Length: 343
Image (tube, rainbow, N blue to C red; front, side, top):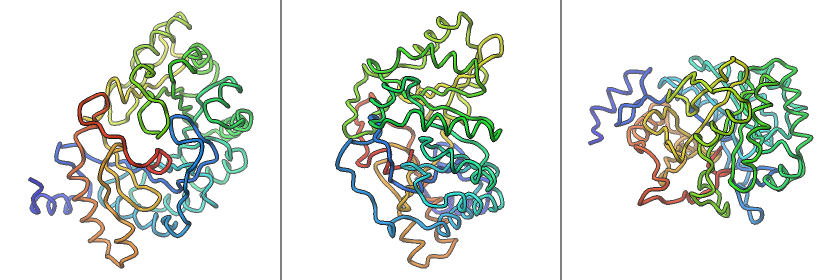
């Protein structure tokens, strides 16, 4: 039972935002916009996306207020996502505001990299600590096929710009889809060993409305390890397995090149999940595949005080799902696309 007594206890302990399965939530993903200038196959349909009106999005002030409330409940890590977060005007201003929130130790961002070359310096100055850039192919033609946009060279310019600024780590997120880009595993192995980038492979998940997902198209983490070791001729050694972070981390046995595997489908990390999500229109989701949302925007705009919002968050997190049901009976795709939920 989700009794009031338990919720009150959790509220008093500001360093402990727990769910009913004993997991502690200290990581918040904030979507700042549903808009994106790419149309990645695994994320959203090519045509027909309806964008939210600007008034539907949470303002920077509202996002900063929620960051303070989450921080008071023990959240230490915030990741800004979209859609494409850099389509939100003056995002560095929000980074600066959140970096001033007591308790927030780490601000990261996931981006497609298109706007990075011109915005990276401002973001780093404002307090951005880490960055993940989606890069599903090292072949400009295949990149265009996967993203439905011919922007490979511009994205690579953004990656180079961030690298020059010295921000670390720079993680490159790769979604492999069988029959499309799994043949590039050796090229990504070479990139991990020749540059300081961490290559993170994310299993193809059923989240886009016309993504063509099927279990057969998932290239599993185990297959990736075999492909990488074969390409390099060296073993991958585990560095961190099944920690609070979703990625299992590996380095090649000679210490050159780090790989991350996010095996959400073949080996879910749900039992260790420490994160919740805030959609750009102010809904709290306790899982990417949640079928319910908690409307924090209505509380913010209905003049609720911080304590009322804190209580709503605590209650929602307490009911966090045990895990997703991909490949299992009862699985239901979310009604929203990935860009609408927040990447």
